[in-house]
Image 1 (cartoon, rainbow, N blue to C red):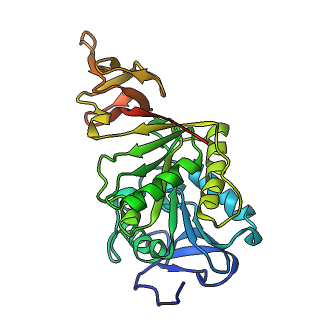
Image 2 (tube, helix red, strand yellow; image 1 turned 90 degrees about the vertical axis):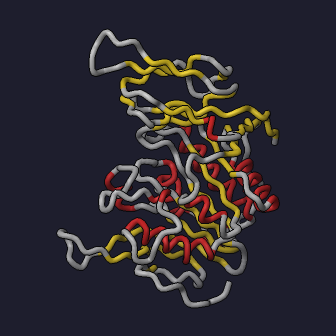
Image 3 (tube, one colour; image 1 turned 180 degrees about the vertical axis):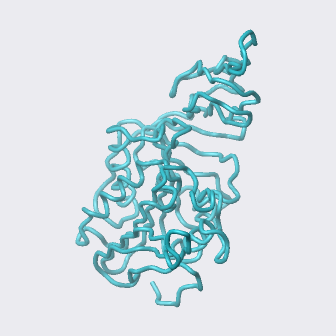
Amino acid sequence: MGSEPLPNTSMSATIDFESDGVQHGFLQLPYSSDRSAWGSVMIPICQIKNGHGPTALLTGGNHGDEYEGPTSLLKLANCLDVTEVQGRVIIVPMMNQPAFEAGSRTSPIDAGNMNRAFPGHPYGTLTERIADYFSRVLVPMCDYALDIHSGGKTLDIIPFAAAHRLHNKTQAQACMTGALLFGAPYTVLMVEMDPAQLYDTAVENQGKVFVTTELRGGGTTTPATMEIADRGVQNFLKYTGIIAGEPELPQVTQLLDMQNESCYHVSHDQGVLELKVALGEQVRQGDLIASIHNHKRTGTAACHYYAAMDGIVLGRRHTPLTEIGDTIVVLASVLGDAKD
């Protein structure tokens, strides 16, 4: 790793990325507000570095109402011993710190959705400036990146790790291997509704090995999802070779495929959502999967939604009140099992 000067950016780090050892500090972004004229947004960061080797960038809190990533990474930053590491681990538990502190998906400062702000802009909104720092400073440093998501307050999703279809087949295979070795109950070849400004896309466009997750949702954690996250982070670091050992995998990981946008079933109606299927349930094309009931008046027939494909229920809207345009059910086709 060279010592080239970092790009010009209004954000700075209080740690030295080239120094060995354990460092706890902040990404500091000046922010003048009514509360603090010469204030800053301070995003916690930890680096654990030991000699030469690959770099893994581990992130959570891309959305502020998703908690498995921040919780697991805060624990990792406090317990990972530098002597276990060969290379470098950079940990940012809460990418969108303002959103995390507000318990919201988007930033309360600029309404910025971090995962729709990439590659960012050095002189843009606060969220765009954070995205720019990741795009031009942190991502170029790394060889591997893991971004831990869950469904937040409005979605509930079966626990999976995922990779995307990429033009570079070698990179795509490395990403898929990383997703499999994360060791979630499901592994998904994922299609996004709008990939253009995702962190995922920004990392993949730089040729890095990238893995993402969805670990249930509802704006909370459970012992089961925390176990998946904690084990998965360790497995990912073992996959990179930064820490020693073999990934600890479940007996079977079910492989799922999202082939195109028809996986997403979007509401054309407003009302109270009644799900007819459960997470993980197998459905056939044409099966009734949801009904939406008009809550503005009685005496109005429900609007029914049917599966556009055979598959398994990958995700569902968690919040019953539904607007036109909300995704209510996501399906994925079953590819089979990946045995350890």
